[in-house]
Length: 213
Image (tube, rainbow, N blue to C red; front, side, top):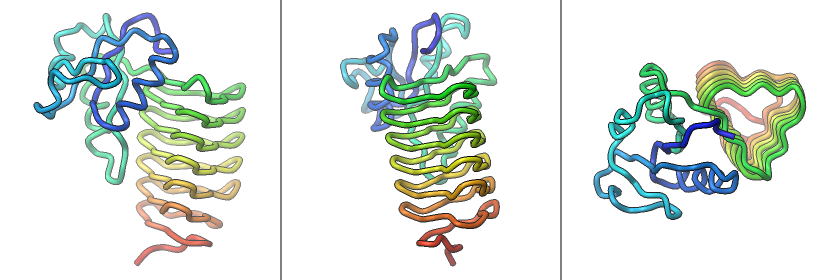
């Protein structure tokens, strides 16, 4: 799932625990985790040692390890995104991670660092850009396109032909109706039902979803 090289997980919090669990289920060799919080150093997450801060990664040449981003994504998701860009610029690779219980259809395109978590469904013809999370039980229907650094939270439903812009956040159990677009940097609140296009940078909530004041 993550290629031929062993993995270092960035982060040691809640999302990192879920990521490590998925990696262990796929039989991936994990060298350890790193985290900037010094109180986590020397501890372990599901038996995986926290080796130290992020700079530990730099002690491994980019052609000897693969990175997996274990930092969670909430609005704003700048820390997760900054970590991804920092190590990508340094030459490190982020491979897609697909939980064994996820369903991924044919002709699906996954960029580096995409994470498809437990019970998620990605239907045929979808395209998902780099460092995006399709979280637990989320559903992405046919021919939808999701930009980079997006978080589609647990239980969210993205119907067919939807376009989700870069840096967007789709909250838990939200629904986006077919063939709509969610603009870059937008936030769709948990439980919202989106029945019209969401402008870039907008915050929407409710049933049907309306722009938050």
